[in-house]
Length: 199
Image 1 (cartoon, rainbow, N blue to C red):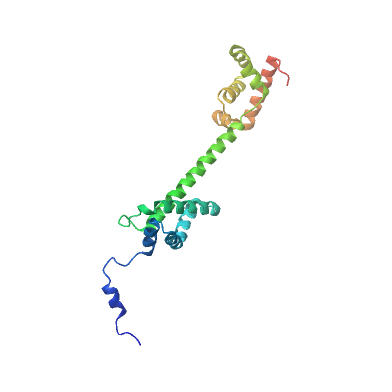
Image 2: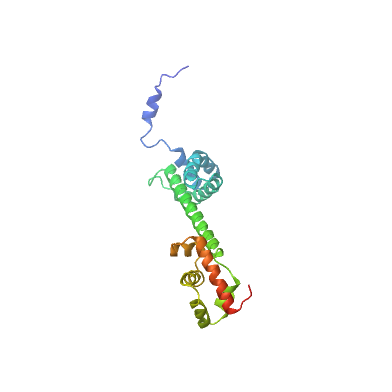
């Protein structure tokens, strides 16, 4: 038997603001240690969170890791959630965005360190530099350097005293890298001869 009660009248009888946000409710319950509620919260927000993270991180595998970190943080912070300060969905989105940006910055810093390490390993290495510049007194080195052409001396000095790579020396002197390598090689060869170091 059908009820004569208009379904809209039920909605009108519900006090304003009493319609619960299921996401906020599940997060509030999770904040009280309710794991099942947190599982519901995850189901309701995971597509949003993963989508935000993927858009920033761009790598699907890394995005999954970051998404997991986001939910660990949301579980930890759930007791502090206050829906008077914003929606649960917005809060999850904010934490996801922040975590994703942090990961991108961390990865960039890691790449920068690797690049610097690579550039250091790319520095010209020659037994002459170790024998001449490290093993002999400063005056002899200066005299030997004075015997080089100006172009050779400039390149060798920037590479060994300045600690620059071939590429950096080339950029500093506005000269092709191949030319710089030749100048350094010829300069070191001459120093080798001056100091009697066997090739």
